[in-house]
Amino acid sequence: MFSKILIANRGEIARRIARTCKRLGIATVAVYSDADEHAPHVLECDERVRIGAAAVKESYLNADAIVVAAQQTGAQAIHPGYGLLSERGDFARKVHAGGLVFIGPPPDVLDKFGNKMLARHVAIAANVPPVPGDDTPMGPEELGRAKSAAHVIGYPLVVKAVGGGGGIGMQIVRDESQIDRAVKACSDRSAQAFADARVYIERYIERPRHIEVQVFCDAHGNAVTLGERECSVQRRHQKIVEESPSPLLRGAVGERARALLFERALAVVTSVGYVGAGTVEFIADASSPDEPFFLEVNARLQVEHPVTELVRGLDLVEAQLRVAAGEELPKALRESQPKGHAIEVRIYAEEPRKGFLPRPGPIDVLEWPAPREGVRVDSGVEQGSKVTPYYDPMIAKMCGYGATREEAIARLDAALAQTKIGPCITNLEFLRDVLYDDRFRAGDYDTLFAEALAKAPQKPR
Image (spheres, helix red, strand yellow):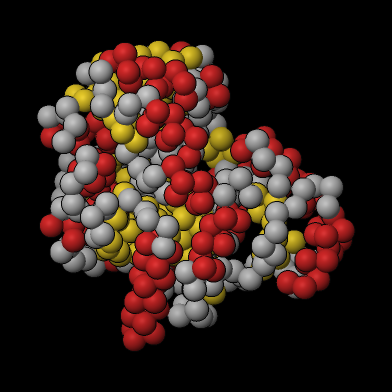
């Protein structure tokens, strides 16, 4: 096992990783930008290194500075967390070239799954069907080819960025009159976010349910699934509520669909020699859960990993560290069985009733619920922190866990009701609206649910 690692991330995930390291007796090195000099994740690590100005490209995306920081502090490995550099094959190569261990999949695997088109080809080669679409990337100047592809695929369709995920740049197209604008908009956003202007087109599922499978593999031939997570409560194609198990997969049809999801998830990752934690994402029509299509692989730890930890009784960060150090998957992980139900909500500084507009600002008041059974809070801030415009405005993740889905909802709602954050505007009340809504309580929701709820008149609780 490692004696010291550098955490190449910030906020709640950096604190989350540091917490496990402290329990295991592993020293930690934090990196920080000028905007984060006094951030909780910096103060809680054993050592800290400034890596650049506030802008993310000059700090948390500064791969060379991060590798040098690890070398200078004597760290043996780098944990990238999620987002930022976590799925960059070129970063993993720099880590290896610097004589360090990258806590994640091999660089060539990151290359395959960091590009959505290559990921589609991996799935097809593994006999796992992706959403029907055009398998050739196209630039913004190829509008004629885009229209031809759209004619073959049929409307509605979706234009996606080749270079990255998270729903960034995604455009839904209902008819041919919209396709020129959609291709250009997606291409522009993709070029800005991923330095890659290419896009591709696939069929749009009308009542989409977004379900992902947690996988874990080691270098000794062990590969397991750790259940599924439902991630269909989204805004701007990004998740804000996740739960495990999925309420869609109920009864005999649900069990068959679950078995198929697990089989397909393992087929995709084992076909390329995957090592570490990862998530294979699928999409299914709400009326046809037993026909899931492959979407992508997130070759890293997910934001929503706590719900899997709660249902399985595991520490996935510890498992990442052990696998990266060359150990086999822990026996407890290989033999774990699901128990109960967990739901996670993401608390953001944003205004849901105004298009989920980010609202950076000070956090002068911060009160979490008293520690209680079945409630978990992973926060990136403390009282006196600020949500800045430089980074994602997520403040914290809160989870409710119980023997049943109903108990998990009740515990989570009670915890949200006791949470106070101010004066910055947050989505706390909207998250409670989600939990209170009849469709959510019935498990009958899809990826369009949250945005529709934000536009509807508020109901009394």
